[in-house]
Structure formats: structure tokens, C-alpha cells
Image (tube, rainbow, N blue to C red):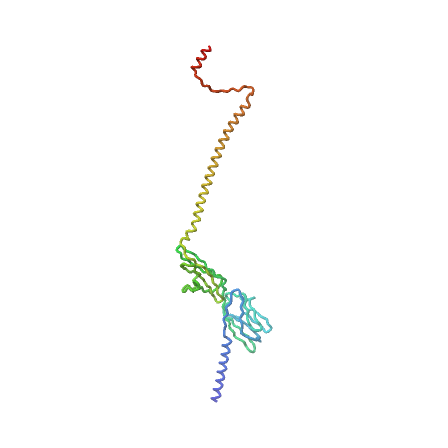
Length: 294
């Protein structure tokens, strides 16, 4: 009697252990990374067609979609409306137009005479990194400030490097201050997240302190040129005014002479012209001559 009871206990323990093993296998979860705005497929890892009376997926313990044996699907969650597709053969779930809030734990179950599942999938959603750009700003003291600008992406980690070698201690900093060397150096900012990596580069050139004075030289030349131009314009204007004034005086004199000429032409042409002249003579001698004549 005792032996028979012991055998039953052993059989029950073995069966329980086997069931626990099957449950563990069914609950083995996988982790998938999805990109915002893109699509992703959550697989059940079942090879053959699933013959189940009902298939369903849950997200965080809330049913989001179900399928009946005739292939009719029903989306239970308004948050996923129009974005879910359930494969009737494998139970795989396609989620389109991923959003940040779609991350979480998804569980598949198939119900029939032989249940399938639960099968868990952990979904992580990230923004995809589009591009990385590095801007440089020079200061008057020859220090250079590098700024790493990342377009797109979420949960991004940053890494700085110089000439291909990692700069230790500058991780996840968007701004880096450097001192130029005697030669050109290539600095890089690398942005990484679970979806991919993008790198931006910039060349830092040797410091030349006199360079900061160069921009002022053209300004001086421009000011000097403008001053000379104004002086030339003023001198030209003055000369033109003086010439105009002198020309007006000459024209006025010519007008007076012309008027005199007109008056003479209007006089009597038969009247003999009288010419006046000044004669110089010695009055003493003249008087003597007159006396002799008399």
C-alpha cells in the first residue's frame, strides 16, 4: 500500500515538472526593437499552421486583437485601430506606423483542444537617427567649441573622437571644447541608439591669432575708398560751379558789346562818322607859327 502511494506521488511530481517546463518554454520572451513611423512583425515562433478556435494578442494584459476560426479579426483597442494585421496561419502580428507609446509586453495565445502559448514579445520603440552635424566656433583666445547636433533619434548615446581615437570622459556631451594643435585634426561625434549609428565630422585647423584682425582690414579700405570718393565728388562739383560762373560772366560781356553794335547799326548811315583822337603838340611852337602866319 505504501509503495503504491509513493509511486503515485512520483508520477504526479514528474507530470507537474513537465508542465512547468512546457510553460517556461511557452513564456520565453524575445525582445524586438522598432522604429517610430515604421512597421514591425511580432512572431509566435510557430512553424506550421495554427489550428485554433481563437487567437489573440494582448498588450500589457489588455486584449488588442482577436481572430476566430473563419478568419474574422477584431481590433479591441482604439489606439491600434487600422494598424494591426494578424496572420491566420502563424499568428504573427504586424504593427504599422509605430508610435512611442507602442512599447511594452505583448502576449500571444491560441485556444483550442490544444492551447498554444502564452508567447511573450517585449517591444522597444525608438526614433531612428537621421543625421549628425558638428559645428565649430572659434574664440579670440584660440579655443574652439564643437557642438554636436543630432537630427531624429531617441535614447541616443554620444561619443567624441579625435583622429579616430575615442576621447575618454567626454561621453554623452553635446559640446566639446578643444585647443587646436599645429596641424589640422579631424574631430567626430558619433550618435548611437539600438536602431543604428550616425557620425558627423569637422576639421579643426591650427590657430592663427592674426586671423581675427583680417576681417577689419576690408572695412578700413572701404571707409578710405568712400572718403576719397566723396572728396573727388566735392572737388569736381566745385570746379563745375566755378566754370559755370565764369562762363556766365563772359556771356554777360558779350551781350553788352552786342547791344552797342545794334545801336550803331540803327543810326543814320549818311551822317559822316566823326573820329576823335588826341594830338600832342608843343603850344609854344604853335603860337609862334600862328604869329608868323598872321
